[in-house]
Image (cartoon, rainbow, N blue to C red; front, side, top):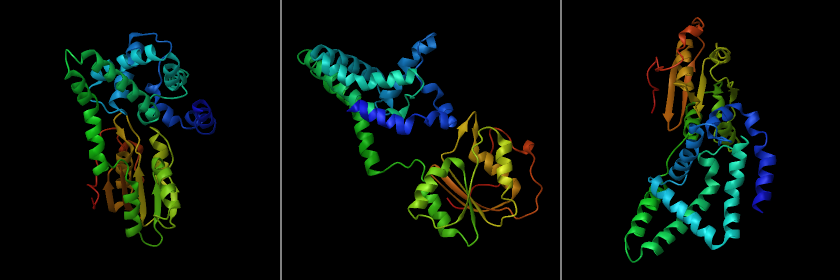
Amino acid sequence: MWSCSFLVYYIFFLRDYLTAHQGMFFLWRDSFAPFPPTSPSDVLWYGSAFVNIVSYPVGSLFPGIAAIAAVMGVAKLHAGDRDRFLLLLSPMAVTLMASWARLYPLENRLILFLVPIIILFFASGLESITATTRKTLPLLSILFVCFLLGYPLLRGIWHFARPKGVEEIKLSLKYVEKHRSPGDILYCYYGAVPALEYYTRRGLIGPIDEVIGVDSHQQWASYEEDLNKLRGQKRVWIVFSHIWQTGGVNEEVLFLNYLDRLGTRLDGVQVTGSSAYLYDLSGRRPVPTASGVAPAGLTHSAGEPLHQ
């Protein structure tokens, strides 16, 4: 059943994803397991990957304790029922082989489906530790449980009570909808397009002339050409979310630096992981040259948005 589910998902959703989205492939380039390992750094990658997995998405603060519990759990399950152990291990093995083939990155949310298996290893390991130390060190197993699962439990309760925002473009779009005027144009940064389409379908923002931004990592001339097409427009909303940041460059800051030279910022809002700015680009300012856009360490030249 698991194999059929994975095969269907891969054929219809994952097969062409990395080749069709080169930006994601670049982002995940360090998340593919090296095979065969040809250097000490390749060998160390596996240890680092384990630490990353137990830290996030599992959520443990103590990867050393997690490693002990996992190893003991694997040994116990292997010794108890080898067939069930291999069945339990099979999703991890298939995922690892897909990563060797550079078809699936071992990265954060993409391996959430492995968390229940890892927790079973932890539980089996804790059971083994309890059985071994019950008479000599009866508190050891309790300490292991607290160190291993205490922080994820408390963190889960905290975020359940106070949900954590990540990319709250919904709030940015609500602001645009509330403050827009007839004839306004919305320019959507390419990283925010899926979220904009989602909320547009659900009626969060009414019909508005949209311009979809180009995806041109580190080829800043293409961004400038794209933004120059907006010249002459009196009111243009620029909406950002899921910002590309690499090599010291934040593309939102890059865009704003150029737009502040191109026109006048009239309004704006910043929320967690998203923002929207209203520009008047109808003036006759000269088109900024590429040399006026610094590649890194930029600051907003026209101050902070008017509304926080």
